[in-house]
Length: 184
Image 1 (spheres, one colour):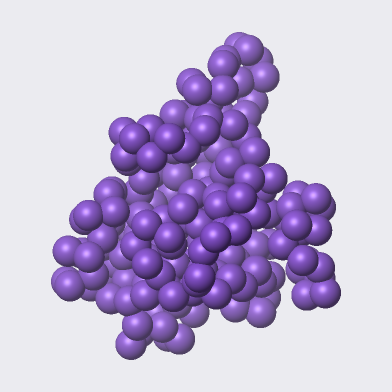
Image 2 (tube, one colour):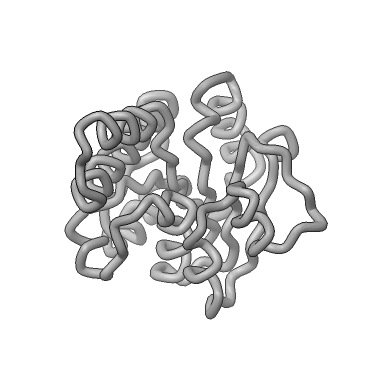
């Protein structure tokens, strides 16, 4: 099973639809779970938190809703994909469809003790999910230019992946690939 995290910034151009078509074409014979970034919806959460001085827990919950909105957007673009909202729902959906879009459940993430912080974004949540469903590979598709010579820690320092990502993958056995959307 492969987890593919699609950066929210891909939705600012045709990169999102190109990435979704790439998944359909290149991974049709494999079980794939897409983790959407929050995109413009998450950007609005950041602005609201700044404007209203919302606490991190409130902003975190709103950012999860942003990911859910992106999951609906993806499903609207690719109606042959299905949506799963929990770890236990993913295998059921994969039996019906080869490609599933994860719409994260706030309660499930709370029960997993995932800290509410902008240091933990959809990158880290994708890593958490990959571990929870025993994925063999995690692919992060980004709009940023990726220097393949940099370590994951260096990518976190350059804000290509979130600051919490390395902690989420430190004990995992799945392969990790961080790539620019042009190479996906």
